[in-house]
Structures are given as C-alpha cells and as structure tokens.
Image 1 (tube, protein in one colour):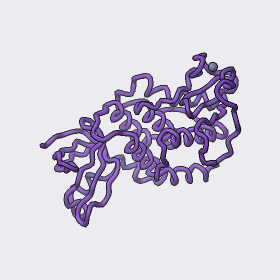
Image 2: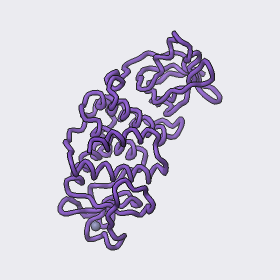
Image 3: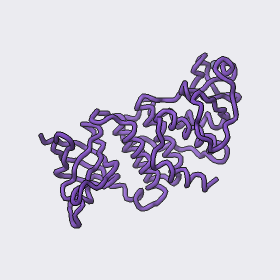
Image 4: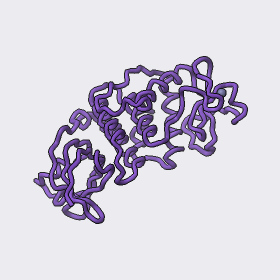
Length: 273
Ligand SMILES: [Zn+2]
C-alpha cells in the first residue's frame, strides 16, 4: 500500500551492496525504517534525497519488514547544519535521541513539529549547546519523561530562592526543606559514571532558572507549531557546567543507555571548559 507523509530523515545506513536503509520520522506514521532501492549506487537520485536532516514530502510503500521510499519532494535539507561540524554533531545527537525515545510507527505530531523547530533553530542560532539542551528537555517531555523544575516535587512549593536539589529517581527538583526526607545530598565527582540512581544533585538558583526557561515551552502546549521561537538564553560558566552535568546524568538514567553520538558531543563540550 502506498502512502504519503511529511517526514524528516534521522539516519541512513548501508543495506547490502546496493541499497540504503533510512530511518524517517514521519508525521503520519511516526518512526519508520524505509529501504532506498539502489541508494548505494553512484548517481542514484533517491540517495541524496534520503540523507539525514532531509525534510520533505515522502511517498512510501508499506512493506512487511521495511517500507520503501518511492518518491521524495524536498522542502528543506538544513544545509547550514551539514556545513558546520559542531552543528552536525549536535544534529546527529538529537536524531539519535529521537530514534531512541520514539516507538516505531506511532504517530506523534507534537513531537514531529517540535523537532522541525529544533533543526531550524540549530541552523539559525550560533550556540548549539542551548538548542541541544532545549531539544533534550522537549523530546523527553513529549516522550513522557518530563523533569519538573517549576516546583518541589514533594511539597509542591514553588522554587526560586536558595539552592534546590534534583532527584534523578524522581525526575524533579526538591526544595531544601524536603531534601532530608528523600536522601542526603552528596557532591558528585565530575565525569563519574552513575552508580546510584537515587542520586541527588544540587542546583544553583541560576541553573534552576535557566532549566525552567528551557523546559517551559514544550510543556506549555505551544509546541504544535513548527515555528517556535528559538530559546534565547545565555548560559555561561558555572551555570552551563551544572546543566550539562545534570542533563547528562538524567539522560543516562531515563534512557538506560548511552547514545553513541554522545561521545562527540561531550568531547566538544569538555574542550570548551
Ligand atoms: Zn519541598
């Protein structure tokens, strides 16, 4: 059966000697794996149209194992991501995160629209770190793993003044009054592997405020448009380091695995410190 949907290519791999297999996030059918017949042959027209970050209208044939791409009408290929090494690394990371979080063949229009905004903002903005953190929080939230930064997850008091804590296990922030009931805060050595999942991480007021701004949009319901305003924050120094570390730990906890592309992202971030 032939069907048509807008979609964005997240990954492309070799399939045998002559074909390619593209992972496409489609608006109508969710995440699908689709064969590009002859896609590995030089001069193949479909090959260039089914590479990562290609956004367009796809015509697909639904198969038993994989679908098959029959036609593509490209709307955007986000060339400024592909031309910039750092942006490309971050783009690959966002794509892998999506492939990990999304179930196959489940329609999710909010996530689809949000991701288009993420790639557009990654292309437009100079600081891919901001877009990557925004993408992580938004994709996790829409996938049902929203961490809470607006109020204490225990007593629901609004947070803002003084230090607060983040509980990986509970996926949210705790105020200083509630912290003793849950666990004892402990300094976590930088770069340590997570061993205890009930770990509590201290968050400074500056980092908390930034996390609140970064996580507010997709949760507020305005993500249905693919023309979301790109986040405009300027996180530097300690605040940036805190957020980087907290989200690395939270991502590893929620996903229960390490993304392959995380190594390159982290080497770029660690080189900047
Ligand atoms: Zn509390």
